[in-house]
Image (cartoon, rainbow, N blue to C red; front, side, top):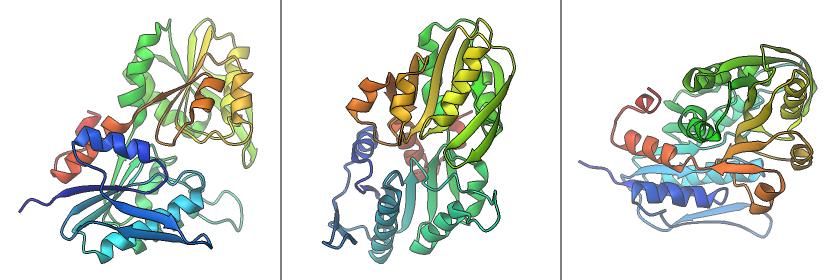
Amino acid sequence: MAYELKLFTGNANRPLAEEIAQYLHVPVCDAEVTRFSDGEVYVQVNENVRGADVFLIQPTCPPANDTLMELLIMVDAMKRASARRITAVLPYYGYARQDRKVQPRVPISAKLVADLLEAAGIDRLLALDLHAGQIQGFFSVPVDHLFAGPVVMIDHLRKKDLQDPVIVAPDAGGVERARAMAKRFDAGLAIIDKRREGPNSAVAMHLIGDVKGRDAIVIDDIIDTAGTLLQAVTAVEREGARRILACGVHAVLSGPALERIRHSPIEEVVVTNSIPVTDDKRSASRITVLTVAPLLGEAIRRIHDEESVSTLFA
């Protein structure tokens, strides 16, 4: 028996969901996600999902608490409507940076979010560029972890006519990501030795590797306040890089991020539409937005058809 594929989305990133739907040649199904006057989330699924293979596309991006609650309540609605399988598609996993205890008496909020999603009733998770790979282990349901860099960003960078490129990891946590990009791009690798002093506060110590006279590409998964990015750019510029570009999968761009990027020597900041990026942000800070809809759409198709997802990166 063939089970019908159905796509739903909340209010976090409807344009991305519609792009994915176009790729798959299916509609975004009808669901009402609104608020009561006191702010409570209300969900009404307006079509039959009994026995369907449901994919809920919802990045838990700012406002993270609102988008997360939307997702949890949508999952509960689908479960109570007798969906055969519920897959949460998170282009951006909010709270992912709280993945371990770095100080006494602090939470591991990324694990709490995983517990909430499983308690709500998801059968599978499809995520894009998790901040830490161990988050997959926080779930007891299957997790498919996609990477935008090797699939989406490398094609864009190859068109930039870069000379002797070097991929720069802005901290030790990003070395694996940078190494994978450098291997596929046939580029050098450099690492920033960084010491974090508090939330949204980082100090770059020194650079490991050679960037002098080369085109440097700083790679990170999240650009939030751009503090880490700018520390890395400062170190790379100090060491004599010829050109500096930056890539970040998730463009949170909060606080002083745009102002910092605007006054930096960065030639271009390449991000994806895992989080909505408004036109004024794009034009104000030399930001190029690439779509991850084909990547997510192909992964959804393969999950539905019970095909391999890992071959997307082989």
